[in-house]
Length: 180
Image 1 (cartoon, helix red, strand yellow):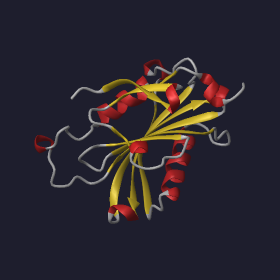
Image 2: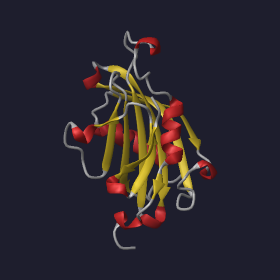
Image 3: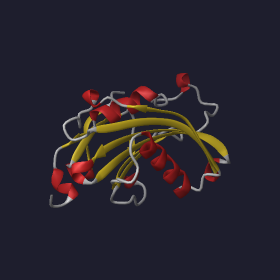
Image 4: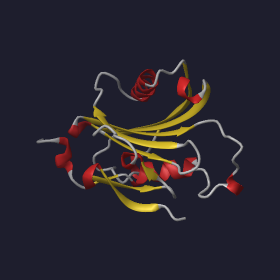
């Protein structure tokens, strides 16, 4: 299966490349208006794109950590551990013209709904200050089950799939942010 190219997000205001087999969760259940959520058809992996209010009180690496901890709190994580935070060069982003700061974070969160197992969480934070918006992209990778890439179609998503989502995210209609 090929990735879905230029998949419209937020009513077409954005688009991105989605990994093979991505299922739009809004076709299955209600999803908040500020989120686009996709799940893998076989594994428990998920991808989330969120438009959030710019958290101007935190800068740099602290902003990435802030959002990681905030998501963990909302999900009721029993424990959280940041493994790495790195600056993401905007030259690789489709949003480079409006994203002066970007970060990637990898960590683990122990989430009750995942039978209290550690879920690998990878996040990209794209800061759009002129729109007073933080765009948070999250890739949740629950512990692997008995499924191996050889017997899953499509295969489990990889960090490369997440990177493609992050770098391909493009803004088409800035009016989504309201009057500027």
